Image (tube, rainbow, N blue to C red; front, side, top):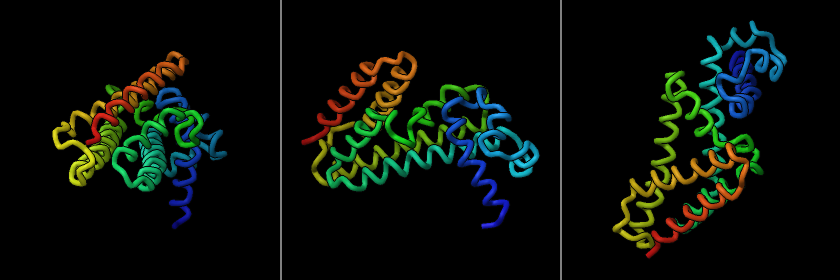
Length: 196
C-alpha cells in the first residue's frame, strides 16, 4: 500500500463514524480536520471534495455493517436462524460498535435522497445488496425444504428491510425503544411464518 493509499484509508476510517453520526450536511470540514489531525490541504490532496470523502465513508460504514452481519449469518446453519440474525443485531444496534450511531444505509438515505446523486446511488446499491442477501437466504431455505415454497421472496425481503430500517428510524427519532421492539417483534413473526 502506498503512502497516498494509507492516507486515504486513514481519512476514511477516521471520518466514517462522523458522517454516520452527523450526516453529510452536518459534517463540516472542521470535523474532518479535527478527526484526522490533518489539514484541509491534506484531506483535499487525497479527495477531490467533501462529496468524495462522504461516498468513501458511506461505503466503508456499509462494508463494516455487512461484514458484521455476514459473519454472524454464516455461523447459523438454519435459514430461519440466519434471518433472525438481523433481528438480534438491529434490536441492540446502539450496543454494536458498527451501528452505534445508527444504520449507515438509513442515515444516508434519509438525507441524500434528492441532494447528493453519487452518494444516493451508493445507498441504492447498498439497499439492493442487502435485499439480495435476504433473497438468497430465503431461496436457499426453499431449496432445503425449510421455508415454504409459496413465500413471495421478493416481497418478504422488502418487508423485512422496511421493518428493520423503520424500527431503527423510529427509535432514533422518538427515543422510545418500544417502537423498535414492536417492529422487531413483527419482523420475527414474519420470519417464523416462513418455516414449514
